[in-house]
Length: 161
Image (cartoon, rainbow, N blue to C red; front, side, top):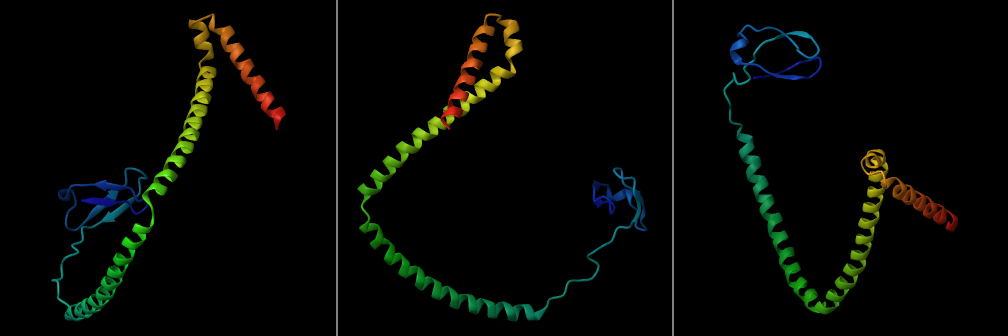
């Protein structure tokens, strides 16, 4: 069975045999709160059938059937209208719109991916600059020139704005 601490709401899985019918004190392993726990049988009273439910159910079914008939009529009307609309639109015009939109969006997608990848590479090089220079000493001049060039590009863009 699963028991929940009333103080901190932490749940514990405890075997049923550890809790006697008369109950016992339990202590939460998380907050050390102590409380009395007794197993309660929720299903002690026999279930009874409420006859009002069946009457209400029949009335709801009748209303649902009436609503379904109206809905099916509307659906049939829509089905007859949709093919007429589809015949009017030309397939060629749809294809040309899709082609031009996809070319422009592909270019900008590739441009964004390139910019993000370039920035990630610069950040990675800056982060690992010291270990790379220790392994490859001649890389120090190249990295210095790269960072100086990026600084010049940044200043150029700021001057343009």
